[in-house]
Amino acid sequence: MKPYPTRHLALTFAIAMSGIALSGSPGLAFSSEAQQMCTGDAMRLCSNEIPDIPRVAACMHRKRAQISPGCRAVMDREAAAARKARRAAAAADD
Image (cartoon, rainbow, N blue to C red; front, side):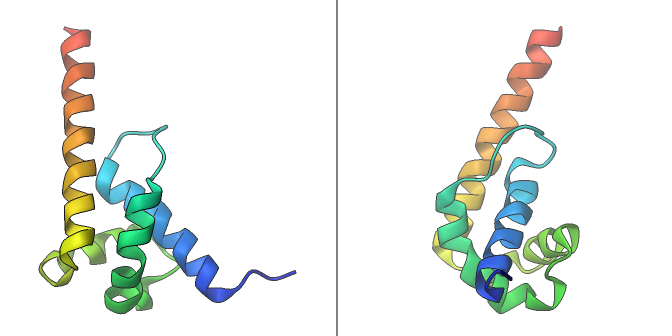
């Protein structure tokens, strides 16, 4: 059975969001909040890039000023958490 196009787009976007929000933190999963808040923005602003995850991520980054406030807040919060985790990991390596 073939998945619904919307479900496929949402999954693709969710994976892309993990790339944006976690930028280089392998092993961490995307949040359901990011998927919920940002799927509409990805489909509206970057649908021509789907299903190419790196291109969707780059598109969302380029069009950040056009992203909804809720999506932007989630992206900011997840990016800050990823930066904090990277700093902690770097400090542990020292």
